[in-house]
Amino acid sequence: MQKTVSVIITTHNRPDYLKESLAAVLKQTVLPSEIFVIDDGSSVSYEDIINLFPSDKFEYIKVPVASGANAARNLGISKSQSDIIAFLDDDDIWDEDYLEQHINAHGNADAVTCGYRFLETPEKIHINTTEVITTDVIKKGNKFCGMSGVTCKTSLAKKLMFDEELKNSQDWDFFVRITLENARFHNIAKDIYFYRRGHNSISTEVANMPLEKVFPRLKAFKKHKELLGKEAFNDRVANQILSQIGKKKSKLRWIALSVKEAGLKATTKVILGKDRIRKKLGK
Image 1: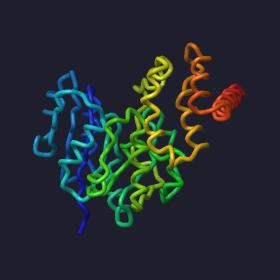
Image 2: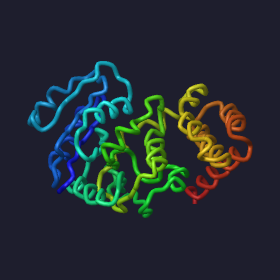
Image 3: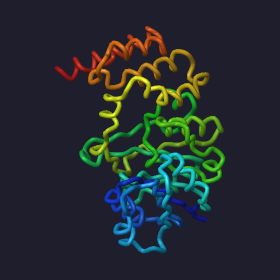
C-alpha cells in the first residue's frame, strides 16, 4: 500500500513565489493527500493567488503574527495526518516526480533528503553522493539541502518538531536530532528540485549585521556543543562570526569576537581559508 503524504508550504510576503511552488505540488505524479499553506503573518494579500487554485486541494492557514518558519512548520506538523511529511519553502519548486522519488526512498528510510539545482542557473547542480546520513556525517554541517528537499515520517516529525528559538541552522539542528533518534536517514543523490537564491539577501544582511546580532546565530552550535566536540564547535562558531568578513565594517572587532568565542586557532583557520579562496578566484 502506497504511503500518504502531507505537504507543508511555509510562506511570508511572497504570493508570486507561492503561485509557482503550489502549482508544482499540484502537478506531482503522485499527489499528496494533504497540502497545508502556512502564511506566517504576511502583510500582503494572498487572496488573488489563492483563488487561482481549487480550494478543495489545499488548506490555507493565515497566522496573525509572524513567528518564523519553524513555528509555521510546527503548525503544519501538528495538523498532518499522513504517513510522511514533505516540507517546502514558498520560493523553491519541485520536479513533477519529486514526491514519487521520495516516497520510494521511504521504503527503507524514516527521513529523506535530495539534491537540487539553482533556479537562476539550472546548469549549477548540488548533489551530495552520501547515501546514508549518520550523526558523524551531519555534525560536520548540512551539506545536503534546505528544508525544501526534506521528507520525514510524520510520527518522527511530531516527536522532534522544530526548535522555534533558532534563527538559523534550523535544518541542521533538525537533521542532527533525526540521527540521534537512530532513525534511518537516507539521501537521494539526484537533483530533483529548483532552489531559488536570486532574491536571497542573507549575505547582505550578514555583512551589515551589528556585532550583537551574531549571538542568536550561534545558538544551534551551542545547543550541540558536546556532540560537535571542541575543535568542530570552534570551527563552526568562527565560520559564522567571520561570514562575509570582507564586506563588514569594523573587521578587527569581528575578528576579536571570533578569537574570544572560538579561539585563535579556529579564527586563523577561517581567515586563511577565505584568503586561499580569494586567491584561487583571482587566478
